[in-house]
Amino acid sequence: MKTRSMLNVAFVFVCVAVLTLTACGAAATPAPLQVQSKAAAAPTQAPAPTSAPAMPAAAPAATPIPVAVVSRPGSQVIITPLPQTPNPDLPPESWPADMFFQHYGVNPLIDTREEHLSTFAMDVDTASYTVMRKYIADGHLPPAESVRVEEYVNYFNYNYAGPETGAFAIHLEGAPSPFGEGYYLLRVGLQGKRIDASQRKDAMLTFLVDVSGSMGDNQKLEMVKQALGMLVNELRPTDQVGIVVFSTQAREVLQPTPASDKSRIMSVVNSLRPENSTNVEGGLTLAYQMASRAYRKGAINHVILCSDGVANVGDTNANAILAQAKEYAGRDITLSTIGVGMGNYNDVLLEQLADKGNGNYAYVDTVEQAHRVFVENLTGTLQVIAKDAKVQVDFNPAVVSRFRLIGYENRAIENKDFRNDTVDAGEVGAGHNVTALYEVRFKDEAPPSQQGNALIVYVRYQDPEAGKVSEINQTFARTQFASSFDATSPSFKLAAVVAEYAEVLRASYWARGSSLENVQGLAQRMKQALSEDKDVAEFAQLISRASQLGK
Image 1 (cartoon, rainbow, N blue to C red):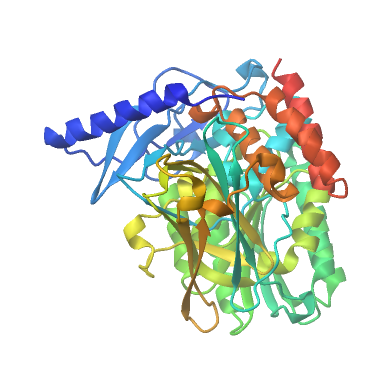
Image 2 (image 1 turned 180 degrees about the horizontal axis):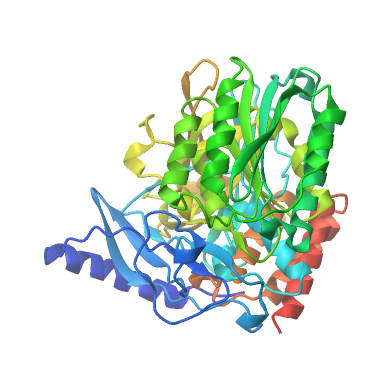
């Protein structure tokens, strides 16, 4: 078990630094450092912040340095860099080449005297977890900048009860942290309403398939073809499918066709072969044109991009490509991205495209994962139950001394914008659950029995059909925190262990005293407690393998 005593001293120093900066009139409003870097490089200097993911050709190589940020009214004050070391022990040259990731920093501990609100957009993506799984399967630890903690946590199903009314049910649980002496963990669990597959709306799907030369590497295109075959088999006769492919140029290879004609659709899918360069912008433009022509009012109009994400011809400007996705999302034509393969892979572009396109981002590393995305979770992938969904946690400064949101760094929303319904947030599909973890420290002035509510969780979202904005909330008292970590539910323990595993892999400043070996023992306990859950069993094996790779 690691301690936070040294961090507490640093925290006091941070607070003094804030007061000093304020008193001296040293106003500063820089954004938290955001770095895109090649996984295979680790020089010592950090590049300037980037406002949007650049394409691979322009990607600088850098070691990401998270920046601690204390929010103040109307500004952000950078206090001090939190040192981060490159994660993998294996030599960089042994990694897959041309893997592009973005580091979004690491959230700091916040003193509730400075700020008592925490706001973020909901996120149901899981690609970061399956990218890690692929790295480990290939004998490598994942690069630190590939790790998005929330996507690790949200890979698992915590079996929350659904809402009786509305789109979401809130589930709160807390207990002493096994990873930080004197600290507690809070789990905020949100369960979206479930919709039976038979009740799903009809869909007009436009498959956008990358057939560039790089898709011939390591059977990437073959994996895509298998995945699309699974999806087609799940569609109803009243659904429709069109197909656009792109290499150096983009072209339509299947006009919108009823899903009942599965043989025709699959004949086109199976005929696809790797070709030349990668014109992502051209492919998106043509796919959106097809989706616009075939637009069905009252149905799901969705583009599914399958690619390794590396654009090298056409308009390769990331801002232009992302702007296109955002524009069509505003026209109710959404976009999900499916990433495949290792080497020559742009995680940054695919993740941001799905974000701007109001869809999901998944990474398919196995046939089983394709089944999970396109069969088991098809209704949730296609049918949205909440638009611009966001969460705000209001910590009571009389009870909570400080807090830290674990993950969600690139989903942060300004606290003042929580009820600003023009601000883009997250889209959540039917049956999806969203989980966030906080590390908190309580004030010691009074025993728990004499302390009141520790926090209030607010959830705000828009109904995609009626356009009505709804807000729900739930309080959580100091006395509702369990007395020990062992007294919590198995699913709470699982979320905590998964988050710590991700923190260790990304070499988080807050996990400096932890190790994969520490996490491995708890994971084995989870495997026994949740013996029927195949994902948990696999997770325990991944930690064991990661621990060996790290030696």
